[in-house]
Length: 110
Ligand code: FES
Image (cartoon, rainbow, N blue to C red; front, side, top):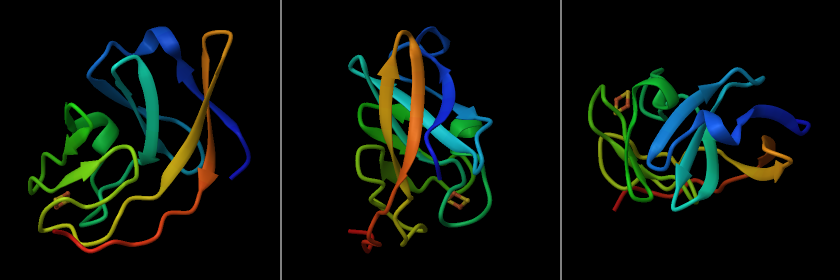
């Protein structure tokens, strides 16, 4: 995935996430003033984390079956998810938030 514009800095308040209309879609999170990005779909089933996820610190909870992931590295933190989310490098330029693909190794749930 080439670098793509995901959103504007002002689109997200701290502790929020959104689904960016990139190809593929990514979920963008704003935590502590920093931005993180993962695959938008939960790794358990097809479900939008950006639209339906609940952010608490560096964790996002999928609202469908309550799996949790670390938004910093995509790690699955509990069942039913066992696969990590792909993560994306984030760059902020002049108020725009860009994302670019970055491989993430699968990690088992703990
Ligand atoms: Fe996310 Fe099942 S779809 S936990």
